[in-house]
Length: 108
Image 1 (tube, helix red, strand yellow):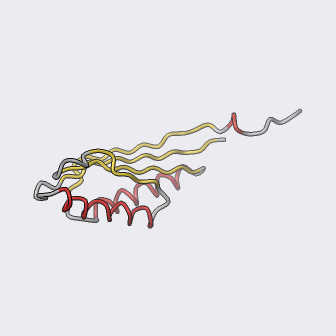
Image 2: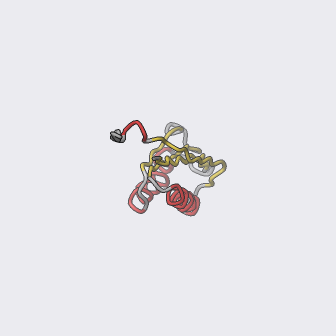
Image 3: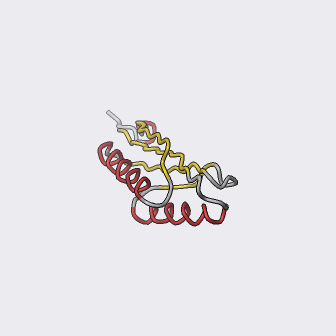
């Protein structure tokens, strides 16, 4: 039996932003809306101390690979369409995770 782990990371750029407070006002609400709309774990990953860029990411796990891919794509589109920033680079992957060692052994 398998599970599927989806992972998405993106670099957001906003060179017109002049302060960390202004950038946080763009990025943080987007991450919060993402979490409330999709069944993902999301975080600000890098660039919190720079005012013009940031790396964000999210992940999810499920038993249906098609569902994981669908949610990953929809959430990625959501990120790209949200605030006044540009997604300049994005990466995503889906990994198969074996659950065989966790399942009870069948006695024959």
